[in-house]
Amino acid sequence: MPLALLALAIGAFGIGTTEFVIMGLLPEVAGDFGVSIPTAGFLVTGYALGVVLGAPLMTVLGTKVSRKRMLMLLMGLFIIGNLLSAVAPAFAVMLIGRVVASLAHGAFFGIGSVVAADLVAPDKKAGAIAMMFTGLTVANVVGVPLGTFVGQSVGWRVTFGIVAALGFVGLAGVAKLVPDMPKQQGVRLRHELAAFKNAQVLLAMAMTVLGFGGVFAAITYIAPMMTHVAGFSDGSVTWLLVLFGLGMVGGNLVGGKYADRALMPMLYVSLGALALVLALFTLTAQNKILAAITIALIGALGFATVPPLQKRVLDQAHGAPTLASAVNIGAFNLGNALSAWLGGLVIGAGFGYTSPNWVGAALAAAALLLAFLSAALERRDGAAPSPVVTGTAPADQRATAHH
Image 1 (cartoon, rainbow, N blue to C red):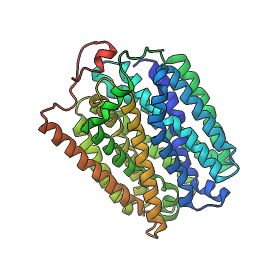
Image 2 (cartoon, helix red, strand yellow):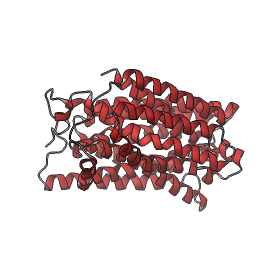
Image 3 (cartoon, rainbow, N blue to C red):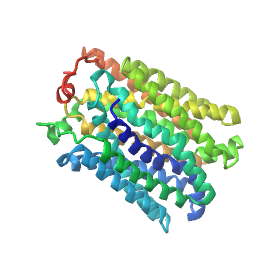
Image 4 (cartoon, rainbow, N blue to C red):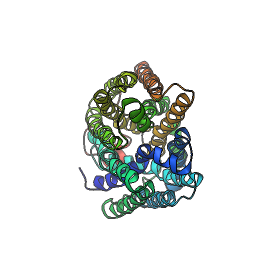
């Protein structure tokens, strides 16, 4: 794998830390600002919506500069947002900081996915995308638990200061290791927008919204669920998040490996199993050991969908995939926002801290139904699903090799 993938993974590590660390600190942040847990959940929802809006906006603004330079600018925006969160004097200001940081998220992963795919042979694209997302998953093993521990020990503001420092490391990594790849000639914004006329692109994005939304329905409220229902101490949330992160690392790598071999079957298995495990979490959350195992499984099954869904969008968007790739990252976070909001609603309605698990199960099951629909439409149209192209064509030819 090219060394540039390491730089992308470093940036992904910082972004992954700031995205997920807030879930372990919701009680502390809510207490400091004097707001309820569901209200503090807007820090998750607001970030996710910022990703949804920022993904296409920043990608379009970045069409005039090289992909490397845009990645560097995005890391700078990420640093500013996290510094603002760290010094926020009020809840509204912290929410603004979260949104500012989130504007970099979608475009970084969207552009980064295209760069990663262009660095390798066509039959290794999903693996390269998974390698970049490894930074995001490792953040949940190292960055998020460490940030949660620091936040609970010396204050959540210190955590966001550390996250901003991670952004500087990511910026340096991109500047040093990512090649200054030339812009693809002849591709204009209208070509990028044309990808959204493809029903398969839209179906893949809908699967992204619903599938990963299922994960966030449960994980957003993991801290109160584990402390109030399973009976864990506040400090135990840290290592429970480590288990979630380990599951994500494994699921991401497995998803990347098998998406290059059998993309749609990989989605069937991961989405179906995710829906089942989320439904069972309502029961397993009552037992410490079973709850811990379930959390790891949710991480693994949820992130096993990421490389295949991202690759499917790249495949179906043909020769102009950058905007579609970024919007699909926004789709992940639209699912996060939707599920965090729905989870807060059912908790606020008095159904208890385990009720978001049923929301997640329903969302994942709906994603599975869309996967079957997508495959059926593909068969009807006589298209071969996700063909593997061999050879060593240049990057611009490889991008259109699926015609």
